[in-house]
View: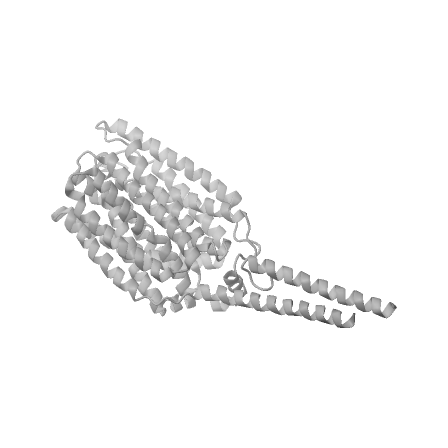
Length: 487
């Protein structure tokens, strides 16, 4: 009896252990994690994403705050429209040489250091601009804008990095879209508020007061966000959120070196095609945004406020497009098909916008701008996430940084060339110029091979989970059979 009792106790204990393991594996599978159950999603991830989106918003607002009231700042500082255009283009120019050292710093020091640099430099730039509100201090406002453009280098390529480091594989595209949303919302507010805060008045002293109020508001918001980053922003979660992140943390350091990563990216043909096509699309968006005031005022004189509202429509529609595309990608994982479809519709939207701008009806411009923005701005997170898929396990910051570098280069070229076309020909000719390059980008996107490496890594881990779960389930059945036999 004693022997049988010991035997029964041992079998029950083993069966209990097996059942516990099976439950544990089932929980792992529900969380879409690896067999060792070493992943976890933290509620804090939403706070980190919100904070990142907020200081990205503050920086993006300043990119367009001069360009959307181009004629007013021309009058206040007594400079040419091309000089005011450079207050926007400086954002693009500074990004190009600095993205590589900043990406290297991200690889070495991580997200928190990058966030601190971004928030502090952006804050400094806003206060420099507060000191520039005099007609003879254009160089000071350019210095402040230069400082803010420097901060942008630490921001623009981070949405996919923040999403990958903090979010699970079934929500990473949505998180990336929300990260991009912050930047887009900043541009939208940059279109909306400056024409309201700085009306086109003739008295230079009154105009200076309006500009000063706008700059003080921006500086106050930037200072608050800097303090929040200092006390709230966290480097990364204690445990990784997805199997892909587990694999990256376990990867030997040498295999993930920065220069080796850059070399591998430039030998990745699908990524190179995406790099160029992304630059063409986003470069067109930069040109349209920078020159929007000039195009609207040419056909609708005195409509500075409505020019800002049209810009707002452009971006808000894009925000909706971004979020819808992010959710769609998380549900379907159809990266190539979605990216190509949105690109083609961006081209169609640009054609419609180009040929309806001069019809004399502002409501038509609002409508066509919304259609254009929905697809052209909605493309931004698609490009980021498609790049991460094509280049895994390379750093998300490196691939996103290169995409943005391409966008800045094309943005500068398109803005300057389209500006010259506007000066010497017409807005229609300038917009057709952009349509040609969007069509070329659509063709290039069609030739991108859909090699979804991150998805393959997550699926491999899921397969391992299912296999281990099946094995433990069979072990449980074996214990039950053994128990019956003994009894």
